Amino acid sequence: MNHKIANTFFLLILFPLFLSLKIDNVHHSTECNSSIGLLTPIPTCSPVNICKNPLITYRLQGRKKIIESSDIPNCKTKWKITKKNFVGCIQGGRGVFDDGKAKLWKDPYGINRYWCEFRPNQVLENSKRPLVIYVPGSGGSADNIYDFTLLRKKAVDFDLTGDTKRKGFILVSVQGRNLHWPTDDAQDGSKHDSYHRNLATNPDVVFFDYLIDYFVNDLKIADPGQIYITGWSNGARFASFYGINRNTVATSGGNKVTAVAVYSGGDPFENTSPNQIPSCKQDTYPQSNLFYLLISRDCDLIACNQQQFDLFKQSGWHMTPGNQATTWINDLKYKMKNNNTSWLIIDSNGQRKNKCLGHTQCNKKNALKNHFCWPDGISDESGIDYEIELLNFLKKNQLR
Image (cartoon, rainbow, N blue to C red; front, side, top):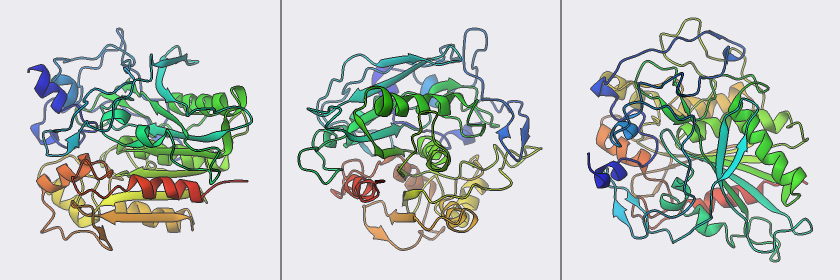
């Protein structure tokens, strides 16, 4: 596979796309209960624990196995001009940025954790800024912030505070660990773990706790009343899990997540697979008042409703439990009693919709493209930038 084609497939989150190919239909062993899900954290790839069933993104780069615990992001723009990826979404052309060498922290488990970081001008202890943490999707990279979104461009001077002297925001784009994914399809690779729900022992929770406390308590440059998480697909799922929990239970440094706004994400409290026994699904969902926004397409691989979910499953795609937006939103509102839940549905042309597309109109090709087109108005060529609405939702919800 040549370099150009490999790059084309490296858009993030290829999770249900090629699953009908049945590359290596391997089910990782799991032990669960209904309280914390997986009893232990998802294992990390390593030379002594090789991941042999990687996502198709890795295979197309010639990586048939993964031994690295994490890939190291470049933290700069890769595609300076726009180009269409394999499903027709636009990548690149969001500006030319270089944020220098990836930041590094070795976590308590001995794993190198990387992130890309931008700080606006004159961010100081007496001029704090909001902290926005971006979580990429399956198989994605911290570098995706530069080529698939406009968030890095907006971080320079977008007003999240309402104070004209404190424009811009601290933007952190995290790199996931390479994980032995506990589903019955080939999905090993860069992800974040919401299946092991013990906050004290989940390495990704520990990492996010460190980042927030570092910027708020150590550097003293992030506003503790404006700690925001956003993400895409698997990143949206983890952002939801982390934000819901850390909105009620503070980090060791005493900080809480203020709001979460994500694109195309599902329920982080669900099971690993329909056949997992005992189930990993959380029995009693946590109560939450988190300010929460989900942006969905009306036809998406994270199915907009149960009819789409069933259609894709019947057509041969592996469908992960919880990847269905209508049920997830209803669970937020009614199981979690969250009155601060918002759901924005848009179609493939960026137009607002008040319901999901009928399953007879929603085909796999459209669902695939919609999932890969981040809603910045460039990816889908609509010119309608819903990042502005996402950021304004965060701005509206501050804690004082």
